[in-house]
Length: 477
Image (cartoon, rainbow, N blue to C red; front, side, top):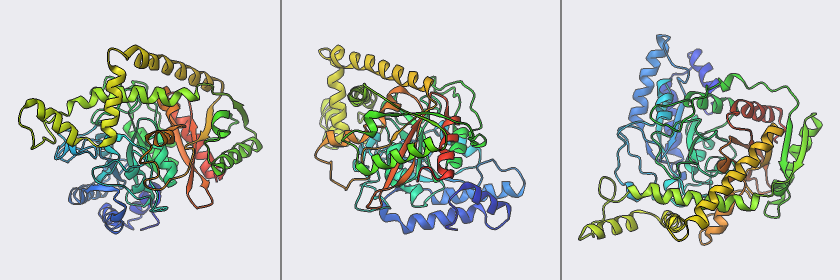
């Protein structure tokens, strides 16, 4: 059953009665057990997943199964699933049990997807290496001495190591695309508001987006089309109709493609990543596509803008975790004030505390206009520049990350170096446009390289079609 690297293969095997959902779940459970040292899963829903599988097998026999019957999904530990623990890989939410299911997950379950467990991540989605988790670090199966990327490192590893068919992550500034690049899988950040955030434990509400990891474009598209759409529980979700992305993957027209000079020719970019990106662009030219170099003069401002705004939102969002209503409460407290202080200082990890402090600073009365207000204005400039570029071109192509997966501990004592890992992914997040990372060969050490493609807002269908064209034609290799 190791051959199942796509949902199409699973469906074909189910149709031919060569297997059933229960056997598929048992296959993944065995893989999870065998590769437990990777630390991708923090909790496996073995009994409930098998129970789901048995019910879906009955539906299949009766011809009443949903379109995702046989698909096994892992969910990042920031997504609520009723009756199960969700602690955002943080001590502060120790023992917290979800009272409801996130809309995105419920829509997958309604189509008979099977939820197999929750996946390790950086605490509250804050990190680029999956080293900031109360559950410990996640190992990259390509090279276990290196990070899998973050914050959705567990989700990327689960797909790469064949522990589930697809997985869900969340992307605030690159937390799906960067780990996808580091592990050699496909990861998408949809348009902001395309997928409901109801049931997602918030980091930065105007950036957070639920994304998908997969081994191929079609599986990714199928999951997104199932999750996406308006939701009465989330007033920020878009009411635009959702195309059937998985049926719109054919691509047969010349495209206008821009690449950003500041990303491809930056000294911060690993030479092999630069070369692989240029190779793809050259192949696209040879295929008859229009490829043009453009300047992105705002690149130096994207990362500071992102971190000012997201830390400000995190400071506000995380104020609700205070030891009063749920989660961790310090046993050392002796009065109300010490309960607040000790519960938060003992419950939050170092990176989360760092970002709360940064956010509190930029929101303070003395610095609000100097930092937060100015960053909002710069965000508008970046968004306008990006959208203007995407009205002139169909796609923007750039490296997903400036380097391949780095070793554990390499950036642990240098937060700025760690933040620079998001250098090329934050543009799409600040602008709210969709972006996908696909594999783009390997470096001399055999580490995966990612190629990132951006399209204009709500152009996921076109983004998937182009990504599918690149992966099926081998242009990305």
